[in-house]
Image (spheres, rainbow, N blue to C red):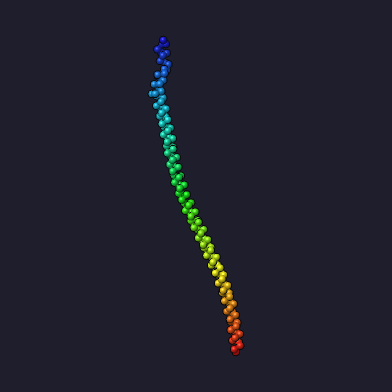
Length: 121
């Protein structure tokens, strides 16, 4: 049988289990819980950021769709205005041609009137 002093310096399996259950395990559990809580907080922050990014993306998508629709409407309006402008330019050219023709006819009539007036004299 070993002496008592020597017996107390050894760690028995039961003493190790008791030490593990009373000191090491709660300390390790506390550290794990602290790390898990920290990770949960970081995940919550990332989740909030993701929700914010998703809302921004949805807003930008709607704005892009509105812009695209407005652009299509504007293009259609520009094409209509261009078409109307072409028609108006053609009409103006036609009117200018008619005015030139009218001037020619008036000049011809004045010349003929002068000729007729001279003959009557």
